[in-house]
Image (tube, rainbow, N blue to C red; front, top):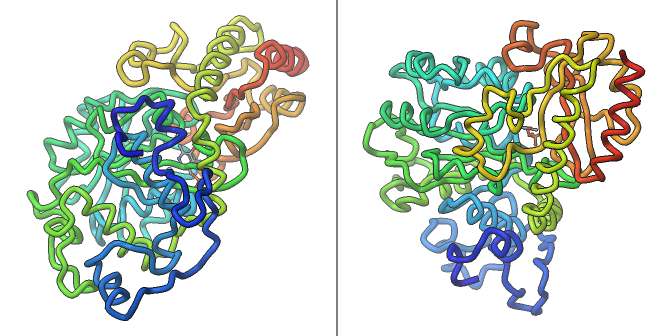
Length: 429
Ligand SMILES: *Cc1c(COP(=O)(O)O)cnc(C)c1O
C-alpha cells in the first residue's frame, strides 16, 4: 500500500499495513511465530538497541505480524502510529504510563466500562495516580474537575454499557485549553462509526477483543497516537520532553517528533511493562478487521430494528440506544458517529432485578457472557457481573443499575433475534 490515506475505508481495512511477504510472496500476513530476529552484524545490533535504526530485535517489543495490525488500526483511525498490547486494559495503562507520575490525576467520565472504572478508581492508586469521575454531559463539571496535576481527560466515544454518545469536540476543546491530551476509548464505536482524532482526541485506545476482532477469539488492545500533541509546550510531560536516562539522555519528542508517543510506547512501555500482543492474536484481529465495515453496518441495522421493537414490549421500561428518537443522545449521532450508534445498548425491565435474571436465563440465541462486539448476539446483567465491584450509586451513574440488561446485537437474522427476545421477555414478565 503506497497511496495509503487516499483509499476508502473498505479498501484500507483489507490492505493497510499488509504487503506480500518479501521472503515468500505470501499474500496473507504470515504469523511470524518467532521470539528473536538475527542481527546482520554487531554494528546493526548496536544501532537497533540505540534506536538509531528501526528494525526487529525481540518480540516483546516488535513483531512483523503485530506491526501489520498496528499500521492497519493507525491508518483506519487517522493516526500516525499505534502500539498493540495484550488487552484493552493493558492499552489503557500503556496510554497513561508516559503521562503520569505519583500525585498526578486524570479526569474520567462516570459512564465507562465497569472494569475501567475499577482500574481507575482502585488499581491505579497503587502507582500514586488517581481519577476524578464526572458526568461528561456536563461540560462545566469536566472543566471544574481539571486541576494543575491533571494529565489527561478520558472518555468512551459510545459508552459501554448504555451506548450513550460523548460530545468529543466539546471535551477536546476543554482538554486543549488545559494543555492536556484527550484519550478516547473507541472500542464500542470502532473507527468505522467514529474517528475520535477528527474530533480533537490526542490518543485513541481500543479493546481489540471486541468489534475489531469481531469473533470472540482473542484478547488484545491498541493505543493509537494522533501525532498532534505538543508534548514539550507545557512542561507537564517530562517522560516525552526531557532526557530519558534509560536511553542515554534521548529526548523522545525532540527526536521522533509526531511519533514520540508511539516510539516511547514500544521502547519504554512494552520493553519495561511487557504487556505485549502475541502474533497469533494479531493474526485473528487482522482477519477480523478485514470485514469491520460490513459487520458494523449489520450491527447498526439490527440494533436499530431490535431497539425499536423492544420499546413496544410491555415488559420493557426503557431502551437506551442512541439511534432511537427517544434517546437524549440522538442529536449527537449525526455529529459523532454519522454511520450509526453501534450495536450496544441497555434495556431496563419494569420487573427489576428478578425479571432481568429470568430474561437472561431464558434467551436461546443470545449468549449470557462477559463480552461484546461479537458476531453473535450477547447479553449480560451488568449489575451482577461486569459492574458488580461498583457501588449501586456507581452502577446507576454508569448506566448499569440492577434493573438493566446490556445487549450486544450480533449480525444474525433480526427476525430470529426478535423472536428470541419476545419469548424470553414474555416469560420474564
Ligand atoms: C472490554 C472493554 C475494555 C477492556 O478490554 P479488555 O480487552 O477486556 O481488557 C475497555 N473498554 C471497553 C469499552 C470495553 O468494552
